[in-house]
Image 1 (cartoon, rainbow, N blue to C red):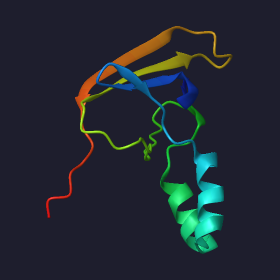
Image 2 (cartoon, rainbow, N blue to C red; image 1 turned 120 degrees about the vertical axis):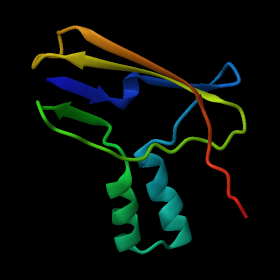
Image 3 (cartoon, rainbow, N blue to C red; image 1 turned 135 degrees about the vertical axis):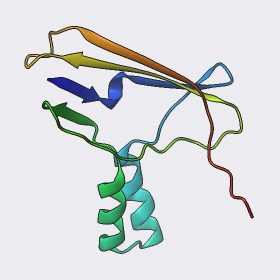
Length: 104
């Protein structure tokens, strides 16, 4: 078993830490903007879960929202293993990630 815990992911840009927008950050914004509940639900559905236990052969996808930057982004992600979260730690690092640009 592999545990996805977004609290164990670190983002940086230009050597400085950046903080992703947590799913709880959106509710007050939506209320202020009077966003329909159906649209709120759809957006939440697209986000990567905060915590998830991956079973063998399971897959999961989703979005993570970061502040826009033109600097390259690095991601350091840790996943713990084992049903009790006491197995080995899997560490991944991805560098030179970029925010998408609007081509228009």
